[in-house]
Image (cartoon, rainbow, N blue to C red):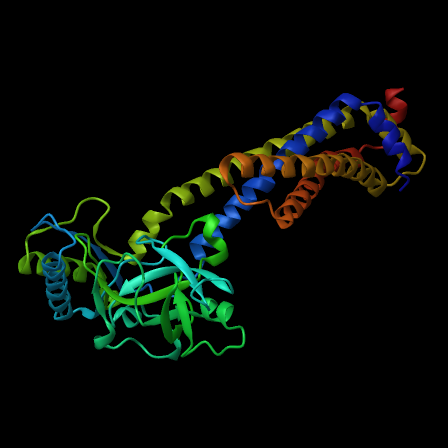
Length: 413
């Protein structure tokens, strides 16, 4: 079809055309950025952590028997309390494994540093998160060991987890590949913040204990240290039979307070399954994603209603013209195609302006709220959505226009 008559008709209705273009553009800008946030949230929520999450329980508590301190006696006392807890938990019927652990993927216990190939960090340097735990941590997490071995009991140190000072470490595969691209990381010496250590094991995947947007570039860079952290707030991970998680949590609570009632589990701590902690951690973001989805649906509905209303108005104004065209031989498909092309031109104009708006809004969000850059993929999705929405919205009034009979031309005259 010749587009020129369509452009001439649009020039006669500049005001409604401009308003519709702006409406489509604003909708595209908001929807594209909302889709980006929703997509990134879903990606974070579904990103594999590396641990076997079924049957995994996290325990965080505070010992209340003393004020604490850095002296050797206090450290030994705290370590004795932890070892007693671990032995108590290991004897429970539903418990399959238990380990001391300073952190858990995504959910807290964060410490990080630089892993390098030389002590002065002048060469290759990899940013990584540190997990402090005993010889059972890898198995309790359910991490896939792809090379090397676990720690042995004699390699486990205990004390404050200030800076890594372990002679051996287990690293995640991304750390090994970044430091040794040739694939020969096992048995190699590396430096943790300038202190030497030998890689004795490599696990397939272990997400860092926190998963903020700004850390996405090294979210899988983790190092396990053979250290039982002697602190007033110790952390344990327990693996139980998945079908007995709720019962095991009650057993654990009862057993711990039976062996030592001088402990405290306030809000934000306590005994929780990994799935419960994960749902709580992402609850706020899940709510925001749902809210954004509802807002997008409303915006798309309002935009579609605007297109339907505008096209219906033009159909009513052009009834006689449509009848004339039908009388001189225009087919129904020609009338239908006319309105579809007209809407396509308006939607395309809105998509061009909306793309600029979307990029500008993304830049503003990055500057003021530290948001991620808007990927072109989501802009493309927004453009396609606007074009498809426009064609779908115009279909009903366009079909009504195509059904206008030829005799209307004479009757309207």
